[in-house]
Length: 280
Image (cartoon, rainbow, N blue to C red; front, side, top):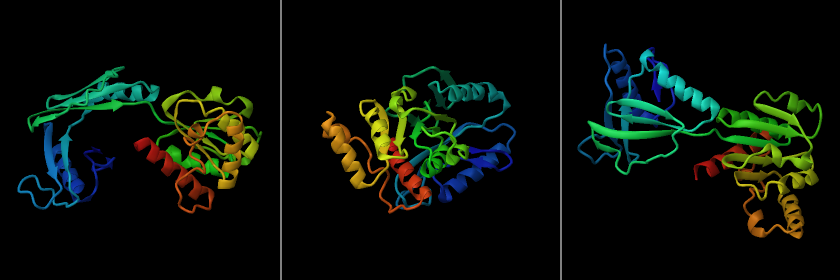
């Protein structure tokens, strides 16, 4: 979480009265002539004698306070460049300051990162962004692009129809293209940060697109459709040699079950399922 000296904030460390109190502390530190790096322990239980946060949700937190000034612009620029280029790197924090190693990939995950309030270490990995590839630029594709982009997915959307209104209206996708569905896998790389959603105009094109991703190594593959439609497509794919085990990896019908009706509701259910997959 970042707190500026004018009181503006971005991010969160959990909310509630703990966050409020620690933000106020950050503001006080920023008002000092020479703010220092420090560490604070928060225990969220009412039955402890020390470091009690006042919250009862259980668990513990360690909060590091890092003053950042114009003197840190070089490291911040390096981090931003790695994020923009989607190049992995690791930020190292300890009681003396922080460093950033662009291109570093070995994350140590220290078993005991905190020796004491005066001696500790932490690593933050700058990872590749998550990419969402949507096949079908209709109303649900438009709504899905909007919500996914807000959650920092890089959105790519494709359709095989020229000049459809919902493709023109889509200001949320970073990449838009009209393509032939007969050869779609070339547009999508393998990777554990790759999400593919199939929601084309017809069930035949859904099957054509889905078939090309069943053997790809990606994080998430989902297809929109009723249970009857999904059953028919899966039965046909089985006839063409795809096993039940392979087909069971497909999220279809797509999305968490929330009785969604509108394009926005469907998009929310799909994004919720993608987030669940990402976080597990």
